[in-house]
Length: 608
Image (cartoon, rainbow, N blue to C red; front, top):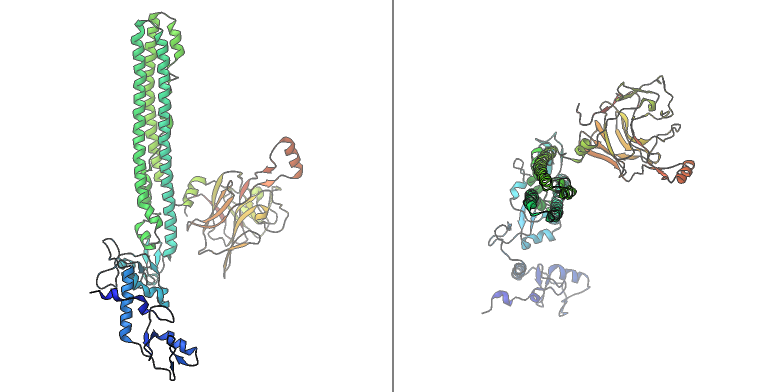
C-alpha cells in the first residue's frame, strides 16, 4: 500500500489565482478551493461574483469560511515539503534547533533577539514576518546563555574598555556608569584589525626564516665548492713533491675537511632551529587565522586577549627567535690557506718545506677553533639581545612611533612672535599682552602670526614630538616650511606649506580644526591634554595623536613637502645639472594666544 506522502501532489495544494500553496483555504459553492485573500480580492475587482475556474455565477456573494480540515492537510503538506528539503538531524558538534520537539534538526541560524537557534522550517517566520525580519540573525552558535548578562538578563551589546569585558545596556547605568564603553562592533573591528596585523607579522617572520634557510644552504654549497677548490690546489702542489711530503699532504687535507665538517654541523644546527621556529609560527598562525574570518563579535572578544595585555603580547612574540648572521657560514680559507706560500715552499729544501707546512697546519687549526668560538659567542649574544628587544616591542602604532622616531625639540627664539615669552631652556612658550623687547631682528621672526619654530628642521626620514596642552585654551601645533612670507596678515594653510591643528576653547564650546583651505573641523570625544605630531617626509604624511587616549586625531596624507626652485636659481641648477626640485626642511611649529598657561614641549613618554 502506498504511503500517504506518496499520494500527495503539490498541484493539489496550489491556488489557481496566486499559483502558490494555499493560505487560509476556502471553498466556493461550486466545490473549488482558493486562498481566502485571493478569492476576496478577485471578487472585489469584478462587478459580479463568479468562480475563476468554472465561471459559475453566484447572484449573492457567498459567505466564505476557512476550511479547517483542508487547512490542516495543507499545513501538513508544507511541513513535509520543508523537511524533505532540509531534514538532516544535528550531528555531534553541530548546533541543534531549539524549537524541534522530536528529532533535533541542524540549526541554520541563531537569532540574537530571541536567543534561540532555528532549523530551516522554524526559521521561516523570521524570513516572512516583517517584525521578525528586523531581528539580528547570525550563523548558529551554541551556549547562548553566555551572550546574556548574568546580572540583568539582557543581551551583551557593549564592551567596557576599562574592565575589558562585555556588558549589557543596564550595566551602563549600574557598575559601568563612569567607564568608557563602546559597541561590540567597534571593539570587534579594532581587535580584528590588530589580529590581522599580528598574523601578517608572523607570516613575514616565516618568510624571513625560510629565506634564511635558503641563504644558509647556498652559503654551505658555496663554502663546500671553495673548500673543494682549496683541496684541489693543495693536491696539485703536493703531487709535485717527493714521496717524503705525502704525510704532510694528508695532514693538511684532514685539517681542512675537519673544519668543513664542523661548519656543516653548525649550519645544520641552525637550520634545525629555524625549522622548529617555522613550525611554531605556523602553529600560532593556525590558531589565530580562524578568528580573522569570524564575524562573531563575542567569540572574538572572548577568545582573543586584549592587544594591550603585556603578558599575552610578550608570550606571542617571545618565540620568534633570531636569525643567525650569515657570515657564520661563509667559510673562506683564503686568509689561512696561502697557496702561494705552499708553492714558494716547494722550491726550498725538504726540511724547510716540512716546517712551513707544519706551521700552516697549525694556523688552520687555530683559525678554526678561535673564530668558531668567537662567532658562536656572537650569535648567542645577538640572539639574547634580540629577545630582550622583542620583549619591549610596542603594543600599538603610537608606542612604536614614540620609541623609534622621537626627537628633542627646542624652540627658536629668533622665530618667535613679538608677544611671546620663551623659557630659558626653549621648552615653554606663553603669550603676553604687551610686546616684548626684541634683541634680534631676524627675518625668520613671525611678525603677525602667533607662532614659533623649533630650532632643528628635517628634510628626510621620520620624526615625532609631543606638546603639553593642559591649561591652554587656544593653541596651534604642527609643522611648517621656513619659506613662508612673514609680512602676510593671515594664518597660513597647507597651500603655504603649513600642516597644523588648532584648538579653540570657550565657556560655551570647544572647536578643533586643521588648517586646510577652507579649514576642516574636527569632532573629538574629549579634550586632548597632550598632542603628538608625527611626520613621515618620504611618504608625505603628517599625523596628530591624542597621547592620553592613544588615538589618532587626524592625518594629512599625500602631502607635497618639496617646492620648485625660483626661476633664477633654476637656470643655474640646470646649467649645473642639478635637480630643479628642492627638499625644504620642515620645522616643528607651535602657537599660543594671550592669557593662556604656557604651552610646553614635553619629553616623549614622560607623564605628568
